Image 1: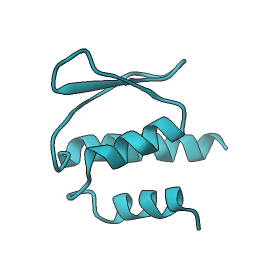
Image 2: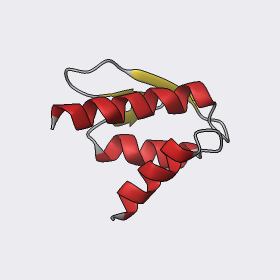
Image 3: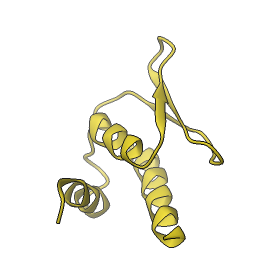
Amino acid sequence: MSKKEKLIQAIINNPTNVKFEDLKKILESIGYTAVNRGGSHYVFTKEDCLSLTIPYKRPVKVIYVKQVIKILEEQEDEK
C-alpha cells in the first residue's frame, strides 16, 4: 500500500481530524490545481470537473472532507 493510499484510507476512516495540507496533497495528486488569491480559501480546479473551495483551517471541517471523499469515490468509479 502506497503512502497516498494509506493517507486516503486514514481520511476515510477519520474525517474529523484532517489537515488541510493532506487534502491538498491528495487533490493535487489526482489532477486538481490549487489557487489562492490572498484570502483564507483555496479553490481547487480540474478540467471537466466542478471546482471545490476549501477554507484553510486546521482541522478542516468534516463537510469539506466528505466532499473530497466523494470526489475520490467518483474517481475510482471511472477506473
